[in-house]
Amino acid sequence: MTKRLLSPNRADEPHYSDLENVIQEQLEYFGIQKGTEVFDQIIPLLRNIYKAEDHIDHIWSFATDYLLYAKHKDKIALFNANKFICFQLAKLLDNLQNPLRKEFRELRANDSTQYAKGPYSMIDNIPAIFSSQPVIVKTATYIYSCIDWIRDSFQGKEFLQSIYSRLLNPTSISLANYIVELECGYEADRYMALNFNSGMSAIDATLSHLLGYGDILILNKNIYGGSHQLIYDWFGKNSNLDIAIEAFSGVEEPDFKACFRATRKKYADRLKAGKNIYVFIESPCNPHGYVLDVPGICRTSHQNQVTVILDSTVATPFLIKPLKHPAEIERPDFLIHSYTKDLQGHGTTTGGCVIGKNERIFIPKGEKVQIKDFPGKDLKEIGWENTMFWNVYYIKGAFLDSEKAFDVIEGIKTLEHRMLAKCINTVVLHDYFKSNKLINVKSSLCQKDLLAKITYLALPAPLMTLDIPVKDIQRFKSFVDSLSPMFGGMVSLGQTDTIISCPALTTHSELSQEFLKEADITPTTLRIAVGMEDVLDLIFHFKNSAELFIDPEINNFSKGFMSDEEVVNLRKETYLNIHERHIASKKSPFSQ
Image 1: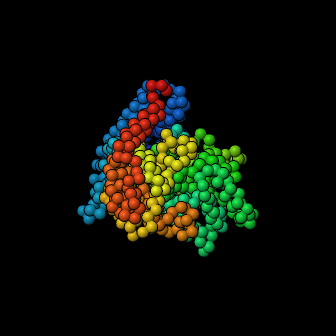
Image 2 (image 1 turned 60 degrees about the vertical axis):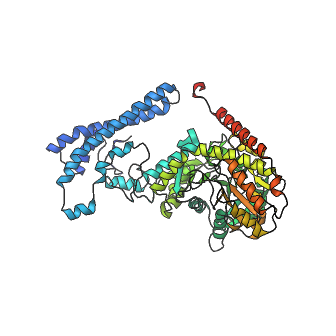
Image 3 (image 1 turned 90 degrees about the vertical axis):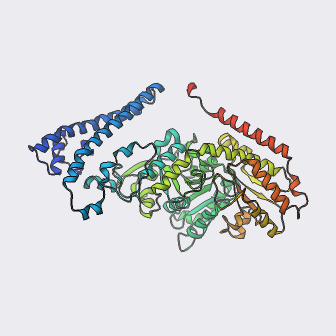
């Protein structure tokens, strides 16, 4: 690295490049002249600091190559050696706070000024580096080091120097790195995440970044009602962006292909005028939990140079990791999550994120890079102004604050255990409800072949709908309300408890009657977002509520389910089978 990286003077045309002159220039920058007592005391330390930067840069380069072939025991040794060096550097920094504190006291102003300024936080923050959890950084702004460094920060060229928490916050950055690691694994260095205050903010930002006036958007018919309203009522509005919107039925690649061909034909004039097609899909879908053939849809889209946005909220990285698909052409370009749901998992906060390739998310201001926009296509140049950070995130301000980011981090730690329990309950509930021939169950478990292709262990999304042939709407409402408290009457999903809602009246109430019919949602469609309770308690309560309210209209409805003994055995067999497969799927470190 250039010696100017550590210098307060990062002028485009530096006066000096040799070490001694760079150090002298630094001290003169702060008013310390050569030949003075202070100059002679500080210059040996600065020499070591600049030389240490060269050594650290060498270690970084060395480790990148070494880790490709090193034995595991040697990786352990290297990690812990470097970790302890971090402690040593922090110890030096902490020691440096002693003279800094003394100097700060000598600059002491009167009491009124001290009350207003408070403690100089930089002096006492060093130990926080080693907090066992990400630090909740509750600040709007940050102390900056010097003019040139903060200038570089505003241009996206200096990452140590934070500017303003509306843009980036260390706690939020920790979460962004965490979700990228989970979604992308060994390819995490190629991807970046931006965090937002809600899942809807993440969707809005992504569409706002990509769509231009008069463009065309293809989506699947079963999507969350809030997304539907945003797309049709705002982006599709003539006085806004006048986006042409087409939705496809079905879940397979051929269903999408047919819609894509028809869309190109229908909007040939727009395409001729330079407008573009984009694809927005949600999988698993809300409210039925169906999964789409995302790899196939991405493949067809990319073969036609079309960008794909995927809302993978219901899947979480536990069920599906779309960005780890071995064929890059079958990966979405932008992956969206609502942290509010299963990722946080406890219903205590809202948040969302967008993950994309580095060059699509962020390039330092003023720079350009060559990218392959679509697999198999020629390189093209993209400038910083066309990345999502500068085009949308930097100016819209829908950031995720530090406390919410911390809540999400803590929630994700138990994601695997929660999702495994929910998937087991989903299988049991699905089979139980299917045993009653009068209930129409819609669930991803109806898609055995696609589940085997798409999801971890062919496990289902913990989301389903039931259609019960009750004609008396008042009776149906009483039945739904009677499912409380065992089933939570709420509009969200992804919490530890099982949640019920009537989509036509709540989450999808924004849809017209025509759209509701196309989405296969009726006034008596019951959505179940499955939780972690003992599934037998859920079943027992459901059956008794059915006996109380449905049996008077549909004789012996509650007796149409499998027997109590059968459902007990079903739970046991499902629990053991899925746990056995889950354990068997784990790679043993001893065999690697």
